[in-house]
Amino acid sequence: MKKKVKSEYWVPDTETYDQLQKLKKFVDFVAEQEETSTEHRNNAEKVKYLIENLDKPETFTDDWNTCIDIYDHMIQGGHYGRNYEDNKGLYWKKWWIWFELGELQINIVEEYADKDGYQDEKWIFDSRINFIKDFDGERIWGDTNYAVFVEDAMNFRNYITNDLEDVETEIDIFEKFKQHHEVKKEDPVKYSVKINLGNKDMIEPW
Image (tube, rainbow, N blue to C red):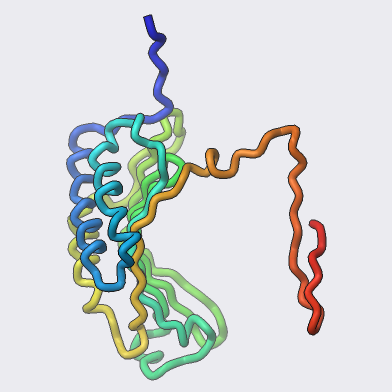
């Protein structure tokens, strides 16, 4: 008789699970955008599969994300473009879904910079669900109306201006951190840093 392995993850209730399924529409939408590469477009079905199986912890074998970003690289680089005053220093607006290390984050965030170099953030939609079974904090935190997130994301081009106009999209899948960065205890960990000295580069141990 096989021993049953105890899950280290929490399983969402039916209502939460059903709400999360609305995020698949966002994945399909990002896959359809002209800015999305073929490689990332091909990840869409796998990411939707992982969303469909958020109630099955045995599928938590990879971390993943789906994102839309709009940038004003002029302001981001410390230069102030034509619409700086109208946009009040807005240089980055993002719609992100990240599943990483057992936590799902769904965010709409605006990032601002002023002419003195100070930065600020405006969190328009902020949702977090922690799937770690022994998590001590508030498991479902923040906004939970995921249809609002999807609707706003699908209208992202309405936020594009003459300056805030560089669009980047992403649908990516990663190995889990602990799998990807596993180091044997007996192996020494070595670091190096590259230092630029005029016309010469030197690698310095760290």
